[in-house]
Image (cartoon, rainbow, N blue to C red):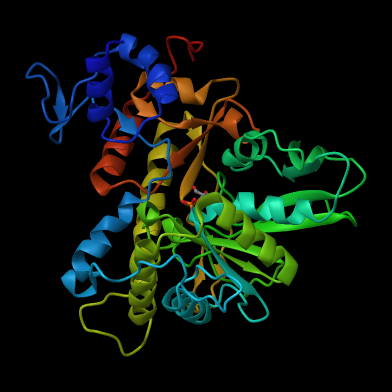
Length: 424
Ligand SMILES: Cc1ncc(COP(=O)(O)O)c(C=O)c1O
């Protein structure tokens, strides 16, 4: 693939690609001509103004769905940072997490109180460049003090978030190593279990599965927010991770936070972030603080008249998308999606299903679902990346509305399984 073509490919799917992804996509390019959505060919068939050649990229959980809400709140909630502000490395030298902006700390506490999804009291708040950085910080902090001769196993029940094995083994640490599916883990000694609830990729509400004496837990609550699931009780665990990426949609700000019970663990996490990035961007923290403030204000009974309740709005959007997807899958008969139980949400007071940020789509037995969808120019992530089977794919439910509708329309045209897959 020439450099020019690579650039055109990046442009045409309008997202950031690693070179590995571009290489992976050369195969797709050979199968059909990729055209920029801005310059469609006149000979192409079009549905609702969209080319049938257009690639729909639902591989990443990029939360662009939230843009429409934030466009409507207007410029009143814009953050302006004067040139003289935020020069110092330090935010609050007296705080255990010395680079945590006091305003962000305050807004994190307020939001958890309003939503009721986590106990902040008796926990230290550690801010990170996304919760991705905090996953690594937590692994380091938990393992460092144990002084074990061999790396400690990190496990999670399959299907697990595809980043966990990658992040764990990337630097070939002597402190920890990826131990695979928690359900088949049977080693003695200390281990770390990642508990993701609701789970990425399948949206299931989870508890730890290994349950051994020397286990250490990291609860990843990226999706424990009312637009995705019922808030059934305030979570109260040793290490709980949250991120604005999936809560508010501001993935680009790269702000996550950890609630950490043990002071020494919190200190080690802070040390990790200190050595890694010497703190976390103040601009990003201040913007995230404002965004959290807006959300909290939108949840109040008496609120600014131009603010729609954020969680109500986004919950309705998710419910609508899931209904459309379930109808489409029912009509199609080639795929299955899971149904989720009704639960009472303490935040809204209503009964609700889980509306996960990803659909965990299953094709008929033995069919490579990712390959099948790729043939129809829908990019998804194969179940194999999550420690599961090729019959499954993870599909982002958080894209912009026109991309999501185009996906459903494209899905409805898949009537039979063909080409590389066996004819059905
Ligand atoms: C379960 C889970 N944890 C953590 C992350 C990382 O989020 P970020 O680094 O954007 O805060 C993600 C992102 O998709 C996720 O799905």
